[in-house]
Amino acid sequence: MRALLTGIADDLLAYQQLKQLLQEQFEAALRHKGPELAAVAETISTLVDLMMQRRAQRVALVQRLVGATGNMAQAFALLKNAARAKMEADWQALETAVVECKRLSKRNGDLLVEQYSIMQRVLHGEEHIYAPA
Image 1 (cartoon, one colour):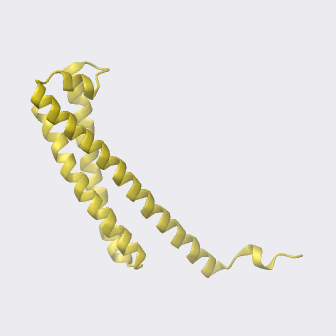
Image 2 (cartoon, rainbow, N blue to C red):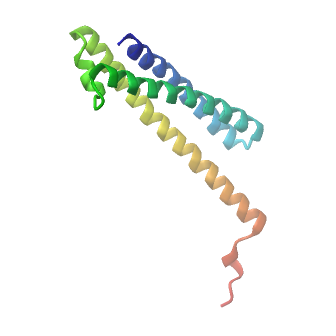
Image 3 (cartoon, one colour):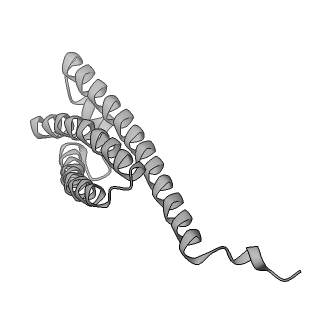
């Protein structure tokens, strides 16, 4: 149970860091700073890999605690009131952070796709401009 609690706390910190990195990525994309984009992408990738490892560990821990089909709510139920309330609050905060980082990631992806699309039009022209009448 302690490893489960520690993993959630570690992920809360990691998602704060990820949120900051996603903002840095967005700013680098806005300014067309390729080297900065690459460096931030590498850092994001490393951080996400660590978070995925903790997620896999969390799933395994919950299954060990409450069975193969166990879930977090069942794991929460094993704790006493104060500890349960803290873990549930941390879990809710983690879920909120995940949603926010997904939103920021989509925003960044949309920006990069739009920039790529614009660059393709600039470099190769638009096919429909000179379409025969």
